[in-house]
Image (tube, rainbow, N blue to C red; front, side):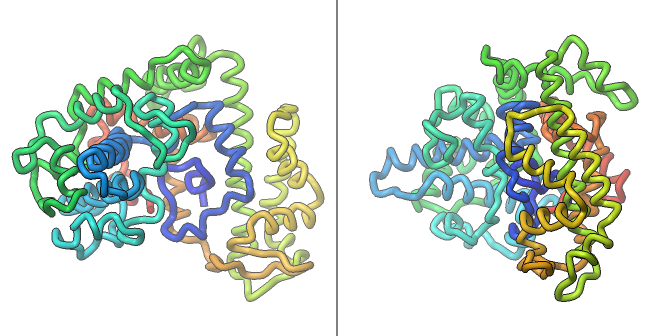
Length: 422
């Protein structure tokens, strides 16, 4: 596993949520990501935001037109995302912007009656929508008292963004929102229009005006978080392969911001090291092994983890007691450190007294998704040690400038055609 599948960090999750190992530190992960690039969640291309926000707008419109409409905004957004990916999968089944390949395989237009498409289990349990909750609120596209999707209400700016993203598309001679509202109300199941496919497809770039509006929102605001987001976006926009990205940060990233980026990078790297130690124990393990044997199997990984944890502690960053507690356990003797890791895991490996036993997600080998995802950290000029949100911002900038398709093609050629796994 890599940082991309840990807690709230990544744009992709492995199929089988049980394999996602937060080690009880999801809150700390989010904190350090937010200190680096606030308010962008896990988005890396514009249509992720559009599809989720479209779900909010359609749900609102349907409720206005029919008091009997009680389907939640989450269900509407998930159904729209499923429809978008199903339509796009007809053109390509190997693009990382598409989700649900296996789940949607074999489905026909008749299967996309809204009453079916909105049901739990029809689509993924961890759709792209989940990565948009924070940015929809932070960028002012919705209003709500808390970061809960079902509480979201679209704002004028949000509706303007949806209108811009739908501009020019007239499926079945209706605007996109009107057509999808009728679909949600059960008036029709007309879902195979090329106009609708192009409007929704993650593979088709948003209209220029929508991309411009999103860029403006990413760079607006007077709050400290907005300033950090704006500066981070400005930094990645000038990064080029072969250049010293850290040197380019001078004059763009403030001293306190840079300190938080550095400390966060050290902490986030601890996850890879912790997982590598757990993987070393898991690979080839029988039904159980002793703590002593596990410590021997993971000796190198535990030593690397100890060094990195001490590096974090040397920063004397005390804002996150959970992070400090984790690092203190990692710098203890190898046996104590491994016991702490397994106790925190309790998913792939679990601790029973002095024995390490198989957890519900045990495989006994490294999974291919973990190996493939290791390749994704070096595909941008962003320093690989930084929060993956910087890499996502780099990709988002490519998308908003209609360059993401060519970049993805080049990346696939370089890595033998491997894409991020769901």
